[in-house]
Amino acid sequence: MDDLKSLAYEQAINFRDKHSLGNYCAKQLIEIIDLLQITERVPIKIIRTVFDNENLSGFIGFKKGTFIIVTNTNHKLGSERFTIAHEICHLINNRTSIKKNPIIEVLSCDNNDPKEIRANAFAAELLMPKDDIKEQLNTLTKNMNKDITSSIIVQLQQKYGVSYIAITKRLNEIGVIDNKKQKELEEIDFDSSALENLTKNLGYTNELNVPSKEMYISPKDLENIKVNYEKCHTTYDDLVRIFSYLGCGPEKFGYENNLQITDNAIEFMKSLSK
Image (cartoon, rainbow, N blue to C red; front, side, top):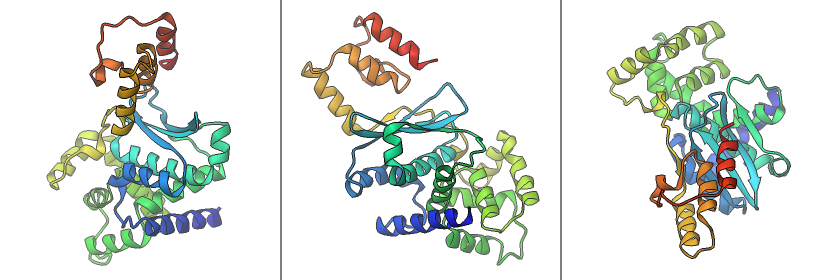
């Protein structure tokens, strides 16, 4: 198991170096996916949308020659970023299996699947590099002469652009804190108002600690949808199906909302909400 994680860490380090990403790349994940289309020579799309199922973090699938990463924006932004990084690892390593079956990520799933362990380790090292986070922690604690507090975790969280829990897990993973200290530090995460107040008192916004609830599809894909619709290559029913994946209707993106749709399109919309 340790060998598997070490392999994932090395892959993340090489990946970050190959694409000149630096140590703080959480905000670059959409751009990284665009880069992967070139380096991996495969079409990739990302859809960010609100899932009714709170336990579903996201999934990666394959349809009509394109790999599609879908993430749940009903999760905290910091957590959603980790999911995207996790799916990038699957995209690099597991394309053959993805073509056969989508990989669905379930929140708090105790998964011993080697592919999941590797993807988690890759995401952790990609977003929170071991050597760098140790260096940052030494600076904040005066070379470990100060106690690691929730304030320090928040500062690291903001530095790396991930969730509060991702930082505590990472510090445990690299041997800086033990299970008892991790549990103690994570108590504040169960009190959203306390974490928000601490975050704002330290001069940061609270965006990493709350769901973005965004509905995102790339501008290029939106333009292609628009062109095809205007040229009558797709119908309004097709628009309904496409935007249903985002959990909304065509009117959300500026299309008329008074056009009649067929019973088939209505049934399709209902099937996605189950």
